[in-house]
Length: 104
Image 1 (cartoon, one colour):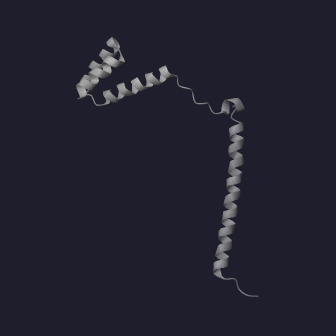
Image 2 (cartoon, rainbow, N blue to C red):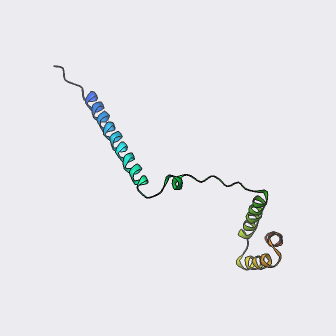
């Protein structure tokens, strides 16, 4: 009987190791699926939420908030306090304008 080369033996060992690894992943998948189903959540609770539709007013408010936060970022603490007071008194647009004047 001819002897098998060491290359064929190594190839068989790698193949067996990959089969064992695939079996371990299959077992892990079933364990994770069982854990997900046993946590008490109903299928309706595990469904992904749909992305909320932004109205034009909501989008404008987000844009203003971003502008306010962006201008506040470059200010010193004393300037920030002044802009926050101005925002409470006169609104976001006035606060943004003041913050831009202070920064530039």
